[in-house]
Length: 374
Picture (cartoon, rainbow, N blue to C red):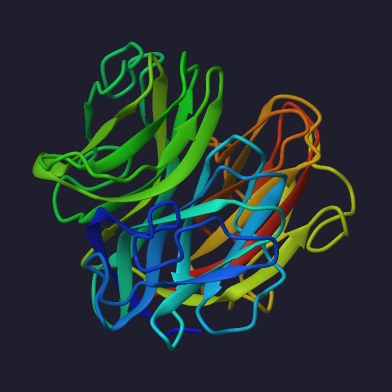
């Protein structure tokens, strides 16, 4: 576990890519049961003193159904997962991960062969940096109905500037970065979406990969650019995009304690909740603070939430216990799919969270990666 740490946002940078050997990793696919060690301290703008890193990890060209586990370098591999993928479909997921004593994070491939990409978006340093302020989830923008931006689909390489400062609970000044769940829906072709600070050049990184007809979310922690804005850009014909804000970083707030990954919920086994699927009429009230993995004085948690054995199209929402459903989403589900997404959310009554799946049935799994304290 790291000491309480503050955040420094970065302009996105690629630090590892097994397709071309970026970052000194082997220029080939990871094999089943193999892990790669990815140096992050001193790379891509990450400080040599960093205690944890914010990175987008992407599976590309998986040969079979598989998962990646990301964990601190040179430590024992935990019984957790960060992203699940299958043949022919690139799948990204954000991780907030403690850095090992060797300055690295490890990425383990469970089955088959696959390429791995790692993009950094920021880092945490013990005692320094900006603090996290969680907010009640709220929709920042939605191109389907014109919330916060113009109404209409984004075409190939059609950039969209989104005003963040002063909206959805983010103050008009003083915020350095935003935490938001970004979703692409109804794309008419394959492609990817990138989120970056406004006013800069388009990064050689990606946040979301999609195919025609997909609805795909990913958590994003992005530095605010010119005028407190971010730029949404990417490749792919005619797609809608939307985003829900979960918090921001500024000079006053809470600091992160990154922890070794630990599973606290698995409805398949009755861990942390009843041994039954989550669906209409059955929400999960997940005890987080005081659970053993997270202390009772934690204000917010970093969770990797996975849905599996999905019965039909639906979505999963996560929000502070004891509060009304905010009408936002964290995961979008399709029948038979196993999908994961990172969640950073304020803890509610009794240090708990509510997890709901209103339109279908599925099993839910949650792994703690860290928490915030005052």
